[in-house]
Length: 191
Image (tube, rainbow, N blue to C red):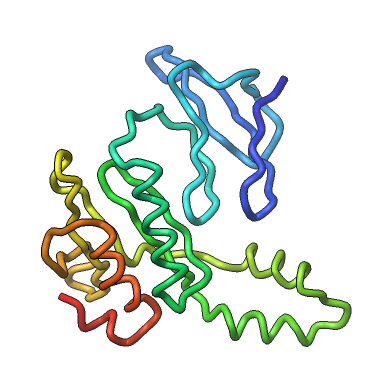
């Protein structure tokens, strides 16, 4: 049976297999279902969908960040932040918050004028149209005390990288202080 994955935008990806120049097996996902399709996921690998709905096969990793810590960030976003469309991803020792590149409210208002559109259809169209950028991350600095550092993405052309914006602390207190700035002008004053 062919390995497939339907991403959050509703596109079906097929796992392909091949060989490298040295004869080792290689695997990749593609939208086409032609070619040498894989019948199973190789041992030690998992399917990963990034925040912009691209699908990859990657090696399984030993988790450094706990599910409870991800839940703290998710709950904090829902409680303290006005941005309601967001994606949380874990990258090694960091919890990363992605927000839409588009104005979600404007997009929803624009779609509501189309004839025959309902909320469910608008939501589906909106999900396929949105792209996301990383905006805030909580980096685990002390594995024993479970203390994190907050960083925001800097969009200055000469930098375009993560910059530290606060002291090291516990995740609940950092989430409460910093997620409220997402989607606000005050975000750009954090450094």
